Amino acid sequence: MLDLMKQYNDSIEKMIKILSLLVGICFVCMLFIFEISFSDEELKFFLILGCVSLLTGIGFMVSKIKKEVFDCMLFVMTGLFLGIVSGGAYSLIFMMVCLFITIIYGRRAGLLSSFLCSGILLFLETNYFGSISLLMVSYFVGGWRDYFYQSRDFLTGVLSESCFDEVLESFISNNRMFSLIFVRMDDEGYPQVEKKIARILNSQFTFRYGLNGFMVILPDADKGKSVQWLEERIYEIKEVELKSGIVYYPEDGVNLVKKVEDIVNSEECLHRYAWMMRHMNGIDSDVVTAIKMLMGFLRVWDSYTYGHVMRVVEYSQCLGRELGISDDEESLLVCGAYLHDIGKLDMDQFILNKRMPLAENEWLRLKSHVEQGVELIQLFEELAPFQMFIRHHHERFDGRGYPSRLEGDEIPFLVRILAVADSFDAMTSKRSYNHPMSYKEGITELRRCSGAQFDPVVVEAFANVIEREYSFGN
Image 1: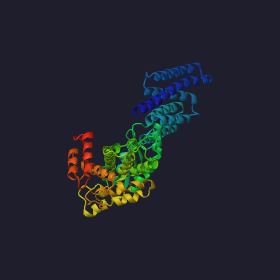
Image 2: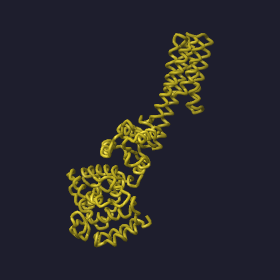
Image 3: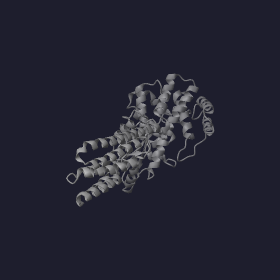
């Protein structure tokens, strides 16, 4: 990405240098066009002036002088040339010159050229009104130009990062409900892709953020509306892989930028589409599309659950291979692992992120994610084969689980594999309300519950996988 930006900037600089040279050449050509209007002394003066301009342009082409020096010389020469050529009857031409310089180069350059042209006007015809007009136009137009370019990103046209903090603080100080969305590309973005992303994310409050990211403030947007807004737009962007996160005010407090950056930068968001496709190779494309869409919703709704699901997929696949399941069974297991906690999309984030043990009614609500997940995937006919993973991954080997209290071999074998992977990750992952176990402690706990909560054969196979594939020091 950095190399591409350097190439882009180099091409812009080269174009500016070529234009500078052309300006010098045109300057000399103009002198011959106006030759009949001047005496020999005046022509000699302007020929020298034009040659200086041409040499300046050539010098800039070979980087012997700075662009700022060339600009200043060009301003002076332009003012002197027009001051003598135009005379009193054509003094309004100064206004066009000053406007052009101000818009292109900013207020400072505009004021310099205005002072120069004003002095010429006063010298030629003592026109105070014209001089003051030039200064005022340059000042206000220059101020508008400087503000516009300071508040806008040059490449994409969205609001610049310098405006973001001010607008965000304004929303918080007014205690106005809003959602903050952070979208970031990987390192393979191109300028044209960045422009497309900015166009698709088009909103009143879309800001450039960092080297390859965008922040979007959605006023008065609840969680459902924000997720839908983001999913509709990300679906249109296929050129690069995007990471995204959403936080909400006032639910997530005032430290929103850090929270949304943590979501995007977290381990959970490092599992990209290519990783997902590697695990789902050979699976029906309709199934892949449906799972990818649901995973997108889950990622922006609950980043912890999303990361948990990704790790469970990896554990389940390794464990399935250890147990010698077929390729078709492995595909079924991987898809089931992706979907096993999808019912948490219908859970309140207060329950999912609570920092203390759940109350009884909250625990019952959390357990209902099984039924909610089954209801959700019934909307997708192609996902029907995976209902058993969602419905039964909390059953126990001794028959004391939920919701159906299945026992032993009544629990499908692939679901028993998923149950071990699911529980192991829950024990070894950091949550706000508990300290994670080490891998070694997690295996010890699985063995302690072997025969009661888990299938003993599956537990021992998983212990072998962890001891072989993962370091207990992790």
